[in-house]
Length: 497
Image 1 (spheres, rainbow, N blue to C red):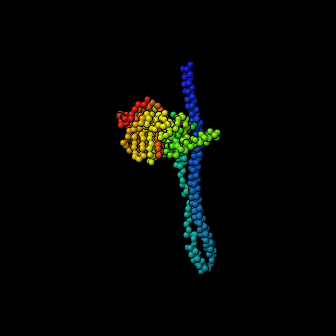
Image 2 (cartoon, rainbow, N blue to C red; image 1 turned 90 degrees about the vertical axis):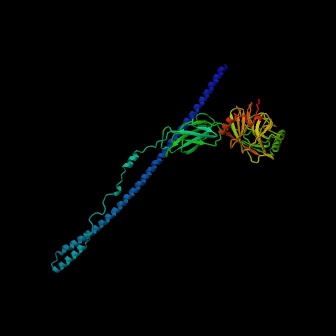
Image 3 (cartoon, rainbow, N blue to C red; image 1 turned 120 degrees about the horizontal axis):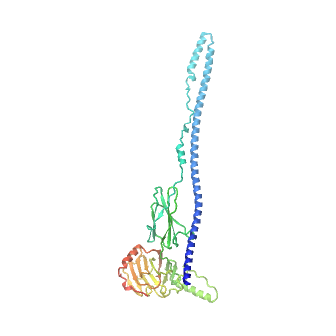
């Protein structure tokens, strides 16, 4: 019976996963269908715009050529009209002279005839009919009609769509995820010398496999990438995976997206647990600050709440700077007394993890480390066998030490601006680094018997956390060499059951 139930549960789980996968695919198809409809409308609109632009150019050219023809027509007409007017005047004068000459033939008196003949000769000599050109100044051919549109017509008839670039192919084997940076590498399925640039899109997700259409953040875009790889650096890995896709662009059009690739980018992300913090600490997500008046103010609030509770009057809601739920770690007492401590809200139960801490310059005293969940409310980090830390004291004189089980080992190195914490739960190793130079400060080696919580103590100052960080490559290399050495921390090395 139990075996059948277990088998049925596996079948149900497999079917549910398949249904989820199919539903995601249906969402993808619907999204793609909407994209096809929207993109086709956009392409038609762009095509209309291109042809309207072409028509506009042709209309402008037609108007310009028509004006040239009209100007030539006006010029030739004017020349011919002028020549025609001159010829008409010459003809009129010539006919008048011809008539006068004909009348002169009838003159009988020799002297008068001789006088008329001399006048006719003089007038003929000066007649415009013998001085005008009888050749048209212009022809009736229009020179601006000498336009050959045959090449243009062939070009227009050969007009076709610009080839769309093929989808690039992302090579997961060449992609690199390290040091909170992702290098994405891709290639084209075939050479295309018309590609101008590439567009890379990415987004964070907590789902493995193909990207999901619903319940996902928008794609972030990196445009105008000239090469076939790109590195995104300075990322906070606050999700388990990242989706990537690439497409190629030529001068006019963008091609299809590559098949999306999902790369694992998980890292330890935690905030400070306000429900566990000492009342003299102001806590907000990844920042904690000492407040000398906080304890007294909080106690007055608590007393007021109790008094109002006894009188039957509802107590006002207390405003908390932290939005984290107190149920994450379960109920526990606040740290009190001189244990100015706050823990992280996420337990470490396996794996290798890394985070960094920066202290205010005027911070008088602080500790950075890890502890078991059962650390007592009066306990201070490093003074019990269930907590490990390095401690900085800037009060009167600066001291720097590693602490565990109420034993301290002085660290003969400068106090860094930022401290990196490396925890290898399975390997039983806790190391502290100068986060800037990656210089090893101290290493604890033990066997962790319970889940760990990041722990912090601060007095007269503040601490800022950076989480969502991968283990840096430099730290990994140092750990490999460190594991082969006994190290200077042997006096504090222990095995805790």
